Length: 123
Image 1 (cartoon, rainbow, N blue to C red):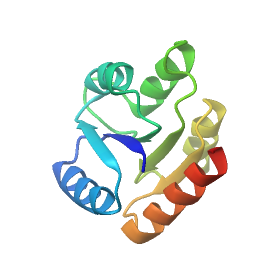
Image 2: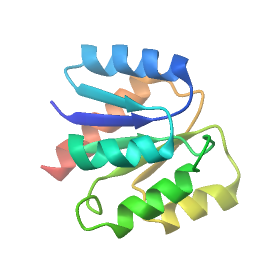
Image 3: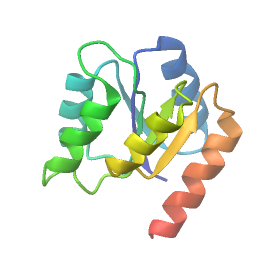
Image 4: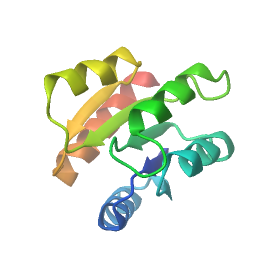
């Protein structure tokens, strides 16, 4: 299936997403903050990135901005996966070039189906 990178500071989210997406056949890597996530995006070369907004050291918005500005990571699709539901945050995310904005708590089956549909369209 696909290589997916999850950047989120919530350990429970790491455990749930890794278990669920790995079971679906995806290769999942994780990072707990923005700087580590950016480094992993460059080395792991994911086909999709799941990105939280509220994290220590660097916000998800700043991570998305840096990834979209760098030639080696600009084409990685980004799904923001966050508890922030305000319209201004949603608009800001899409303005940075993200592909999906999904609010938490996320239904993992729904997330898996959205990921698979998105990846299928890209092939």
